[in-house]
Length: 111
Length: 112
Image (cartoon, rainbow over all chains, first blue to last red; front, side):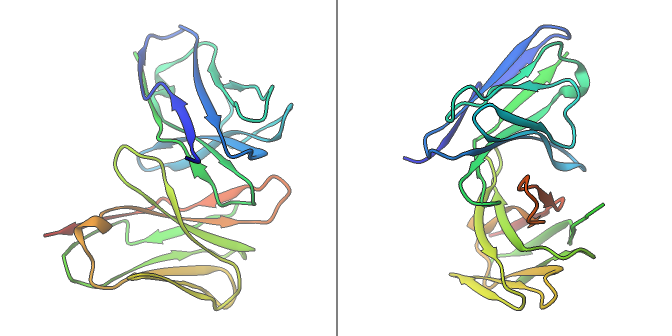
């Protein structure tokens, strides 16, 4: 089944404790992206990757890092999480411009 | 800054009613997509409209792209409880970074 898989689904952590949210897609898509979704602010792009080893900042990249060492994986790294990074995170991939396939989300709480 | 405004923000109707959701911008898009997001899940692509004036139908859902490719509407006929969810529109600016401009969504509740 074609899908984007994120892990974990839920994560509660404390300020400053490094964490990684994994994302994997099995559709051989070149394009991958991370979004955060917050009430009243909608979906905002954090980082995106056009292909392996090519990543670029989205609209809200501060406090986040990504890597794209292989086509299928695109992990999101929070080196020192802060409470304002509490949010619902989505990974997405696509073959064509737009036409995104989303994962089921990771709900992160930073206390 | 490109913006997509969706209206209404919230909509609560009874099963069987019809409804229309709007997505408006002052910018021109090369294409526009509609997604539906159910609680606890990621958005799922419903349709992409590309040509100005284009109308696409997906069962009881009818999508229209404005002639000038600045706006779009989603009409649902005889809504069902399974239509409940957050409807998001996203415009493609055809840039090299494949950036989508997102509306804030219309939260639809269809009551039995």
